Length: 140
Image (cartoon, rainbow, N blue to C red):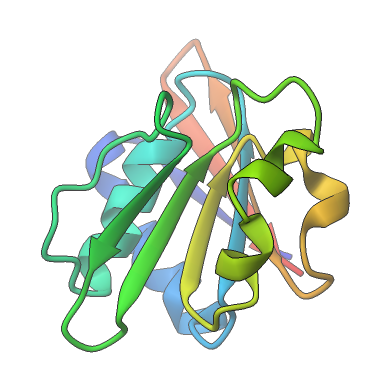
């Protein structure tokens, strides 16, 4: 596991770069962290690094957003916060996305963790409220 500290939200761009440098060949990334920890902000930074041409925002209500890139095809961004049980992921056809070979970025993966492919990259974000520092740990 790799750990990086980010003292400002703007530093997440370097974290995104590091995640892709270490695990850019992986396609499933699961983002763990409390509400407001910076999961969506980090996913935005990663999508920017990958050349997303669409605006990246949280799919809280839609559950999944798709962003296009010139080099990597579609990127899929999931937010499973509103799911009550993992079986609800079947309704959106999660397996089509997870096994498509496209990048998939999953917020609130604890809701569907048993459905994630074995080779996903775990990204955990912890926030020190006293100084707004984020500690990001990632690996397989």
